[in-house]
Amino acid sequence: MQDEERYMTLNVQSKKRTSTQTAQLTFKDYSVMLHWYKILLGISGTLNGILALALISLILLDSS
Image 1: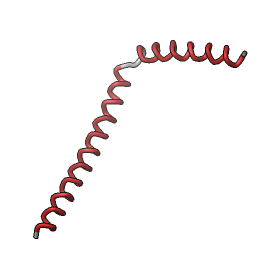
Image 2 (image 1 turned 180 degrees about the vertical axis):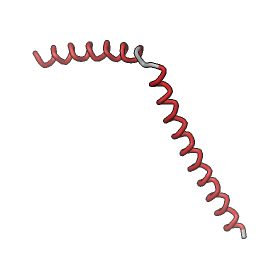
Image 3 (image 1 turned 90 degrees about the horizontal axis):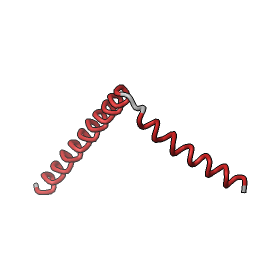
């Protein structure tokens, strides 16, 4: 029973903390996130380009 009460107390406290942490994100935090999103977008674009070239080359090799 005490464990359940502690869980409920911790659960309510963590929800409150999450909303205040979200409000405290600074511009620097957003710029760091944006930087990593740009890196991931570049990597995924490169991989998609490589896969597209591989697919085109396989189609051309199969047709000849």
